[in-house]
Amino acid sequence: MSKPIVAVVGRPNVGKSTFFNKIIGKRLSIVEDTPGVTRDRIVAEAEWSGRTFMLIDTGGIEPDSEEVIPAQMRAQAEIAMDMADVILFLVDGREGLTTSDRDVAELLRRKNKEVILVANKVDNPKFYGDLFDLYELGLGTPFPISSLNMLGLGDLLDEILARIPKDHFEEEDDEDVKIAVIGKPNVGKSSIVNALLGEERVIVSDIAGTTRDSIDTPFEHEGTRYTLIDTAGIRRRTKVTEDIEKYSVVRAIAAIERCDVALMVLDAQEGLTEQDKKIVGMAHEAGKGIIIVVNKWDLVKKETNTMRDMTRKIKGELQFMDYAPVMFTSALKGQRLLPVIEKAKAVAENRAMRVSTGQLNALIADAVMMNNPPSDKGKRLKIYYCTQVGVKPPLFSFQLNKRDLMHFSYSRYLENKIREGYGFEGTSIKFVFREKGEKADE
Image (tube, rainbow, N blue to C red; front, side, top):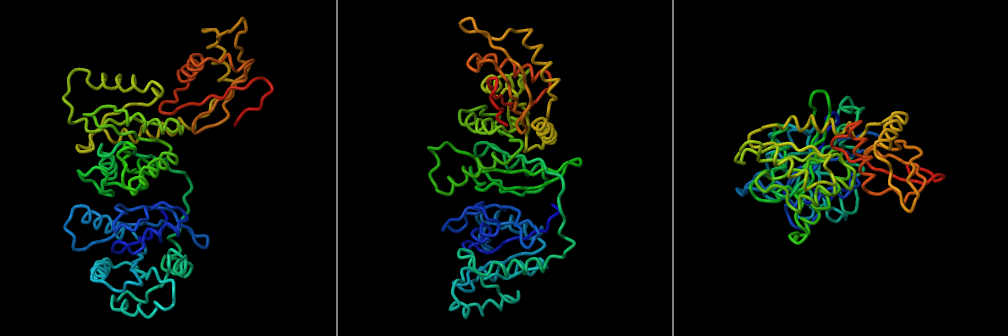
């Protein structure tokens, strides 16, 4: 990641996520009154005075907790601290200094990083007198702010930029390939991300649904930059009971919207379920690249052609998107993971592929000669012209004599012919049909 990194840390419920959302201008982190709802690091780009940096929101640090989730949240926060150029240590300016604040401050002093002490929830000068106790943390003068009311944020952002050396601000030129890891809870999405990155960047436990937020993690492989988006598992709507989990489902859907390629992770022992079909259908409708990743393959008893048979079964149940390649992995064993990334790069390139108009019309002419277009009441469909008018996903515009004569079966036939000629593996392709004289919908 070439941009400077600023991490936001502190004990639970001091307003870190509210601060994060105000700075980046989006509701990306979950904001609730329940302490500890931000479990994982959340990363987003922020801009101030013409300079951009990466802002990381972290789960609340509970130094003395021995429970699994709080302990892993603490580990995640420490990873963020180690990555950061500047650390913002948020405390509750109204509540005053707590034992947990002192413990977090001790942890920060050992990091030997640039730390800015931020007193949040200070929306009235009458609270300034309560800030003197914060000096005993030994982290300098506290910055009073109110994230909710956006008071003091400009001065704080100025201070952040002042603490980052100017040569740390670099511009990224090429776009990276954005890969969303989607699927039901507990199918191994976070384990796949961790295995690819070689670092436990997201919480992994046996508790279903431990990834509540979508986490963006940039990395590079063989000269190509990628961003992995590990999403919260999408449950069936009847099982979504907590407000927090509802936010997570919305965020997972948003992650699909902004990705280039979706890795649809299945549990090899469960196979393709109805819920899996609904989830991958979202990616299909959004026109995203799709790879079906059958995880936990090491747990399946193998016989002759087991892999081939499961591939056929999945494709048979997903006939509306049989363009999606099926790959088999074991995140636990680290098996067949890098080929998935390489395939994702190829799928992203297919989504951006353009076909020349001359080649395309020659292909369509051959297809029409091999299989005559349908007719109705003595009137036969005529295709005058075809051109590609868009990418991501590829969009083709056909000029016809009469739109109603284009049956679904013939449209599917033309799609298959285009795929035979140019591939387009992993990506849907869209058609728009217009009658002579109508303008193309680009």
